Length: 219
Image 1 (spheres, rainbow, N blue to C red):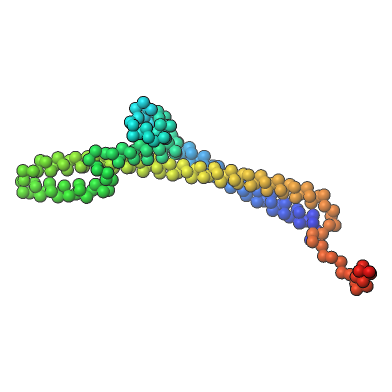
Image 2 (cartoon, rainbow, N blue to C red; image 1 turned 135 degrees about the vertical axis):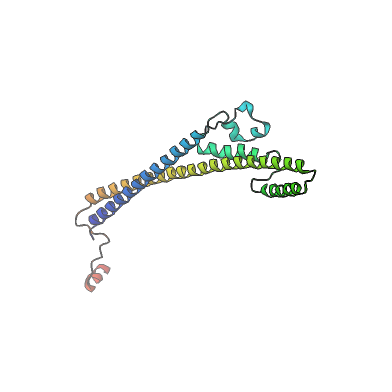
């Protein structure tokens, strides 16, 4: 095959691949922008603002991100992760009466108290008022945990969605760089092709020499 033809074929292939990478980069950029805008809009609708630095408790001050975002409005995925894990997570864990249990875990003692209240009502036991108060208290605690854990889950979902946007930006950047390099190589290939003599061959076979020619060369 002629060297010029081979250069042109490789250059055309390089340009085609560069075009595909460019399209991939544009698609990933579009997805990344959508994720960023969508997360920002959804978080802004929650109208959450971090506590001011002066209002942070000593335990809250131990969180670097709560100090960093103090007083700011929550609008980004990283802020959502911080608020969910460092603020809501801290207060859910320290909810009075929860004893470190989650919403799911506290369901068992709540059900046990319901059974005791039902039995006390049927027996008209004197401890009924106290049991009813305990049931009301643990129900309130469980509702608080439910609200906190639900909001925490929603914020972490927003954070996870924002991560896809960040990854999309990274993929788009790599695609743009690769497309640019391929385009430059393709242009260099075209330039080389038209500097190569039209009759030049790629990996041309050596000419077959006769026995006499070989003997003459050896001599």
